[in-house]
Length: 275
Image (cartoon, rainbow, N blue to C red; front, side, top):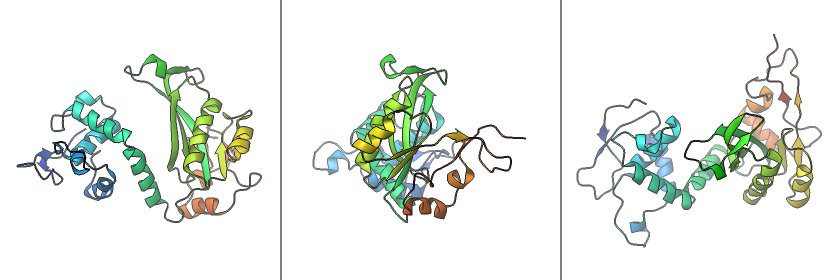
């Protein structure tokens, strides 16, 4: 990634003598974004009544370093020299993770976008297999025969706007129907308002019955159907455009109206485009 010229950091700790400069990368947070994120971060230990020294590095630069690694997919030891040391960045990231800061940020940002109703009533679950880095231990990875990938699998639940509700990470060898137990349990534990969950044919068997009987969470399995010749479906994702790319009002209508499993459902279409 290329950066803009180094400029004085506007968010340096008050104890810094002359401050320090920071480079702005495409992954760096803007002033408007930082104004939203900064209050959501946990308070420093020195300001929370636990004593200790004040933080040495600016929190904004720490966040920029984390985003630099995530956006570019770099190893943390490849951070440019204008960022804090890689060990410090990782230590702060781990401390914030243990405190639940990232989940708090995701929830707050989702609530800002869901202006009509902050409580979702419908969810969509799916999974994605990704290759694991060499540093991922063998006990945490697995082989996905269907995708031909040795790595991990992300099991996620989103609302009808595609905003994240819950996520579970497993080895790629874990079947979707088995990981659904943990994912649906997490989803129900976080959102008592969910009345319907849509899933594809990777979640067959007794899992929908279990979800309905144990979690009071009805599931509807959507089978992939061929797209008609004049369909406006997006072949890249397999959903009909009226659901995956609908307007905000359409998405909100899907949630404000009680879903009927026999009439209300997203439509899977073929991934192949017809001539």
